[in-house]
Image (cartoon, rainbow, N blue to C red; front, side, top):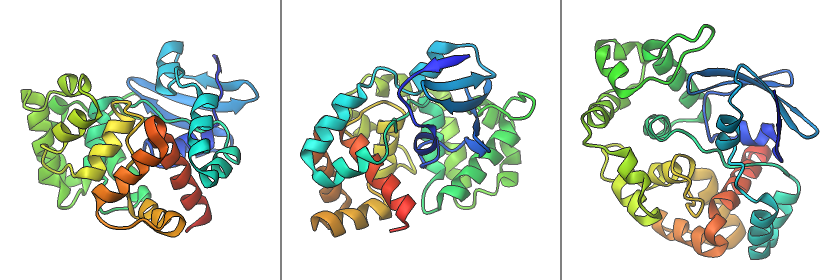
Length: 267
């Protein structure tokens, strides 16, 4: 199936937003919901194999985002980001399933992207439903039904936190549907009430899981960039607020261009 969309797969799928995509040759293999999908970029978008649900794919890549408008707004805010966006056309923010996004980012503390992907895949292999060559991301109940197997996932100190997250999501103590109805501030505040969710994880989940494009997550790379390029340092709150005020309603896109540049350059 051909998907017509302004998107560049390499920076979108390969820059730490989601952690279940693997590239082989020109093709990206990943799992969205119950589908094992191969995506191959071409001149007008990409070819998709393994999924016939066009709207699922368009939703995942946020077809509603007006990239020219977004790029224009964040570029007017800052010439450096303007240069980054012009050299990386077609990068999009993904719209991930909220439970998977939250559970993934609870695992993604104090560890590099490669290790995050390994832990996530281990969780899927241990608890997820078999799709053949890959497995689904498990539901909270699937995790709890076999929670005695959690040591096999090698999550370290995150193990107890991860099981607690599944318990609270399964019981309804964490209501992701309700969180999804909140504005950005309410969403972040509610997420930070969850054990294991600090401000950076909350911003990542708000951005990638709930679509709050004004979120501006700050990790070590972004912190260094803000200091080097804008002379901004200090607390997480100071740096994240700087990003949101500078880039406005599409700050998350600006952050992703800054992050992508830092990954590519190694700085």
